[in-house]
Length: 461
Image (cartoon, rainbow, N blue to C red; front, top):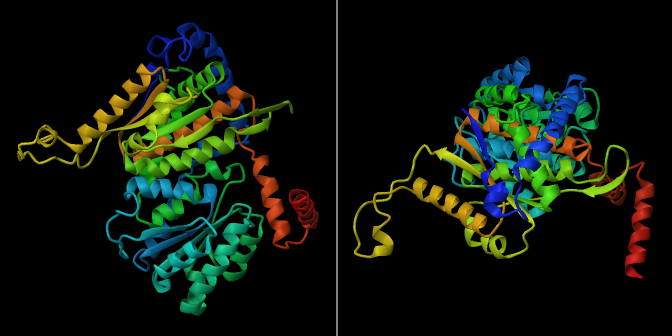
C-alpha cells in the first residue's frame, strides 16, 4: 500500500516560467510548509480537529463491525439519508470498493446495495423508495446537528414508509448517526429506540468519512472497514513527517498552494482515471471547496480566497472537457489520479478483422489503453503549458482507498494553514440554511423570513 505524488509537470522546465514553478520558489517556500505542519499538529494536539485520530479509534470501529455482523442477512438494501459530508463519503467508499453505480453485482441479503437519498427532489425520493422493499431495508439517517432540513424532511418520509410495513419493529431498522449530546435527531433516536453511533464534536462533516458517518453504511454494505482504517492509519504517520519526500500530503499542499497563488491557477481539476474513484472525486470537490472558500483570514481581514474544484473522469472527459483545458483560459491546474493495477485488466481479443483501426488493439488491454490515455493527456497539457501533477495508487482496495482519503484530508488541512484561513468552518453555507428555516416556518427564524421577503420585494421592483 502506497500513495505517490509526481509534481514534475508543475515545474517551469516543463511548462515554462509563466505557468510553472522554479526550484528556487519551491526551496524558499519549504519553511512555510513546515510552519503549516507545526501549526496544524498543534491544533490537533489541543483537540481542535479530530479527523487525523479517527483511524486509531479501534473500539468504535470494532463496535460498528460487530453491529453490522449481528444484523447481516436481514436486509438487502441500505438506505442512507444524508446530504453533503453525510453522504458523499459513503458514496466514495461504496463506489470504489463495491464498484461504480449502476454496474455493481446483483444485490442480496449477503451483498446489500447502498441507496443514497441526498436530495429533496420528490421524484428522486419517490423512485428510490419504489425500488426498495421496506421489509428488507436498513435505514441510516445521518446529521451531526440533528436538524439539517433536507435530511430531516426526507427521513420523515422514509420513516413513515418503513412504519407502514414494519409497524412496531420499525426502530430495529433505523440507525441514527449524529452528535452524542445534542440535537433533535439524537433526542428522537433515544425516544424511539434507534441504534445510534456518534460523530466526534471535533470532526466536521466533510472530514468525517472515516467516522461512523462513512463507516456505518460501508460496514452494513459488507465492506471491510478495518482494512480501510488500517490504510488511513498507516499513512497518517507519514502525514506528520517534516520530510517533503515522505509526506506527500504536505508536498502536494505546498505545490498546489504555489501554483495557485504564484501562477494564478484558480481552478483545480481532479481527474481520476478510474470509474471506481469517480465518487471520491465528488467527495473531494466538497472537501476542497467548502474548506478553502473563505471570505476572511484568521485575522478577520477580507480575502475572499478559494480555488474552484472541478471533477473530470478519464477517459470520458477527454471527449467532453479537454478541448477547453487545452485551448481555453490557462487558469487551471490538473491533478490526475492514477491506478497502477486493475483486478481485471480487460484483455482485448487478438482476432484480426483486416482493418488497421481495429487490429492494432488486438492482444492488448483496456488497462494499458487507459494508462496510455492518461499519460498522453498529461503530455498534451504539458506541451500547451498547462501545469499538471499525478497521485498514484497501487490499486483500488480498502487499504489504498483509506490511505488516499486520509492524504487528501491532510492536504486540505495543510492548504488551509498555508492560506491562513480556518479550513474547518463554513459560514458561507449558514445564511442559506437560515433563509430556508424561515421560509419553512421554523420557530426562531422569523427574522430570516422577513429578510427574505425584503429581498423578494427588491428583486421584483
